[in-house]
Length: 110
Image 1 (tube, helix red, strand yellow):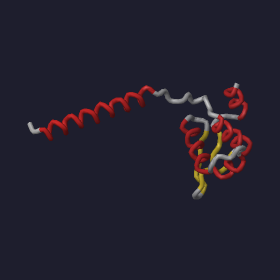
Image 2 (spheres, helix red, strand yellow):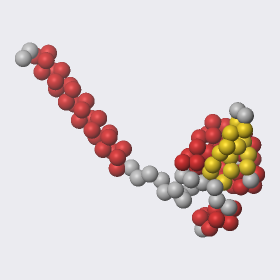
Image 3 (cartoon, helix red, strand yellow):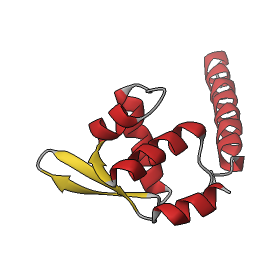
Image 4 (cartoon, one colour):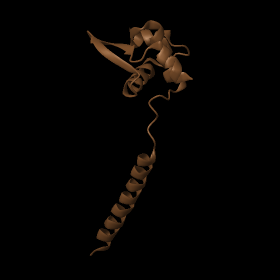
C-alpha cells in the first residue's frame, strides 16, 4: 500500500467515527411528549382555540408576542404531528382546527 492510500483510509475511519458519534447523539434524544407544549405552541393553540378554525395567517395575527409568520406555520406543523391540530384544504390555504375540545386542552395545561 502507498502512503496516500493509508492516509485516505485513516481519514475515512475518522469520518466514520465522527458520523457514528453524531448518529448516537441524535438517537439518544427523546422526542417531545405529545401533551407537552412549549410557550410558543401554547400561544398558537390559545389563538386557534379562540378562533375555532382558521388559516395560519389568522392564527398568526391573533397570537400575542407574534413570532414570524413562517415560525407560526412551523409551530402549526409541529402541533399537528403531536396530534393537537388538524387541517383541511380550502383552495390554496389550510384551515386549522384543534383535535381536542377547549376543556380538554385546559386539563392538559394543568
